[in-house]
Image (cartoon, rainbow, N blue to C red; front, side, top):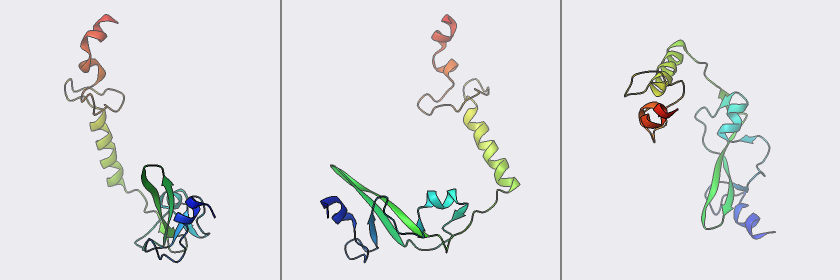
Length: 126
């Protein structure tokens, strides 16, 4: 058994408190949140059943929590109110606070304004 595999293989949960498996070796019937979402499911309040772990050099390990697929619930449908709220939020992210126009793209937080307002001298030269 390799050193990496040995540190991450703890099916009884003696070391980490919950059953732990090496990365990509999760047992059947378990899935991460992202995998559940791809199946059209959500954890639905169930507890974390296990985790998969990938040790990294000079940093903490990558950890993904696993949930039972059988206990997962279907994703809640999008309501009209939620759809309207998301559309309003996306419009706000695309609107330049300086010139108040729709930039046509999401304005980067590093600039804080659209490119035309952030670099006016380059826009005049073009």
